Length: 461
Image (cartoon, rainbow, N blue to C red; front, side):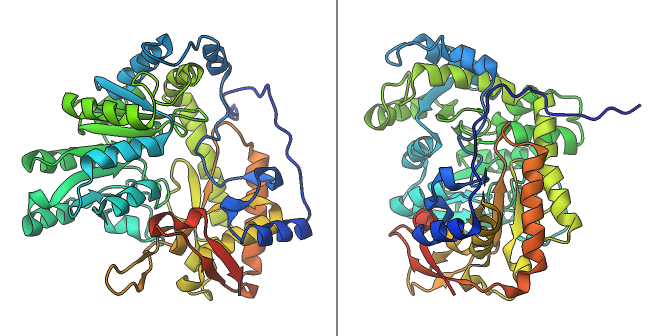
């Protein structure tokens, strides 16, 4: 007899959520400028805006928080966190920060050089914003399969195109590249993983040309699980054996601990380069706090120390990946176009194929975000023309991204199968009536294009 597998935990604490009427949601959208980031969380029924800082913590994490001491010089909470980080990363130097974008800022200040290239698989918004401010040139070099939402399923769509990287070195010179940044998993194109073979190849090219490699490791455990289940030779390796090998191919790693750290706040800057560590210390003191707390409280560091270990448990990861895959299957069975295979932290719906009548300059994925909230109170996130659109530096003409998606990010250990069914049922109904929808007009954007989606304002056409 085959037994069903359920969540590998029991629910002991619940947070009430409220349902709103469609008329109320239409008013909330209007007040928010049709931007999901500007909606109030209390007016959201199922919140899939982000998987960052939205995890449910375990009893062991809450217990660990009671040990948290004062978060200043030499606190014990830091040393417990440091030991946990070293265990998973296999790197000697650990600088905590208050969250991932602070680690991003430190990394950008140390590695992104004005006028030089920062090559990545697909840079996410916070580093791209830092690069733009610092005058660095951020390049996305993900493999072709990763740039096509309609491409056939490929196990590692987050890989960097090594041939393209080598060609850049051959034509522009190694000195033109200040850093290579590998995001695991690759958020922009569906939470797609990077293979160990690709990390090894990046390391070999970078080492030959004296280019530092940084891994943006917010979803390190999910990436390791995909390597274990998809890459030949790793099926019998433990998750932590895989993570240590992943990080053996970089000089430095940054982490938003609000993802695979299973906490609500916190970040990490981890390196094997002592000189880089010393410079990171100084930047942390100026912008974050003393080096043994970096803007975090002692209790938060203790929760993170435990959360990192729990995120590397195979039983948890199997549940996590399969939960996301379930939602993807439901949408695919209904004919809804998604990025395949589903990634680790969410399902990405292809906005252009969903709304073929809406041109990209009328923001089809943002229109889908609005429709999903309007119909069901479900909040998702646009990762398309607004989030990743840019402007030609000379002509100021818009440059539209290759991918145009709506991300449905699934919080860790928070939602049940029934919540996912609410999302699927709502999208299926919208898809049935997709021909009736028109696009949107951008009426406000902030001064930094790479960050405009957080505060943008829209109107319905």
